[in-house]
Length: 117
Image (cartoon, rainbow, N blue to C red):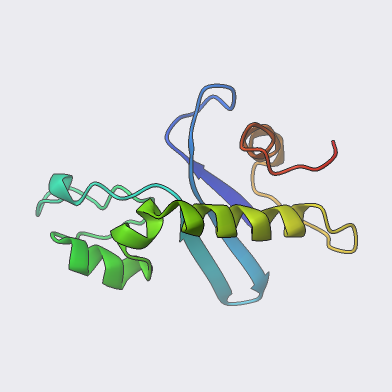
């Protein structure tokens, strides 16, 4: 299963901020592509990286999501993630199940994931 996480509701003017992916039952992953703004974290706000958790520091955010802000800021990280994502999306032996496929398709196309359409 696959689901895009974006910062908007319209596929033609939104940014891909991460994605969720699941390869087998009860084992799913969230992969962030945009650094969470931990300066916005207070007791009354939720983490801004698409998880429903209350965190107050970058360390807590890293512990919650498994990826540090410095890693996400590294262009090599984003390049490596996108390379692996292209491999998955273009593997014709896999069947992808998507929550909101049409939206995700447009977002991923804009992100340059497809080798062919």
